Length: 157
Image (cartoon, rainbow, N blue to C red; front, side, top):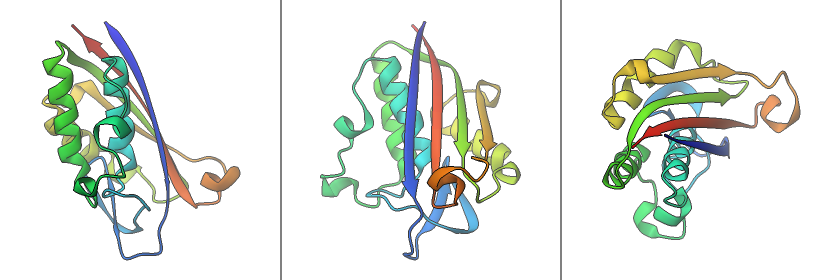
């Protein structure tokens, strides 16, 4: 067994960009500033997967200096990352994600996000956990300026 931990954070943008979390469009919320589509949740999951498999990090595979990844669909990046993890001889045991933000409220979207992540990763939805938390008004995340995500994965070889 191998354990990986991922983290990512993005600030909200004033640009007309949709918010995507876990491959799910979240309506009525500003998007996140990023080189790709800004799916902060998927970015943290990718880092957790690569970390558990000792395959580097998201930046080494999909650098933000490469125009090929400009506005990229993070769901496709996650599919690619999972394929690399499988090619290294591992399979996903489970994924646990914590999304920290004051807005949007995550609860109405949790089941759709879990289902989407399970489809992308090729696992049963029971292997995917997504939780939403606030930062109780502390720091910039608590002030509603962005979103932070922590992800943990267990890989089985």
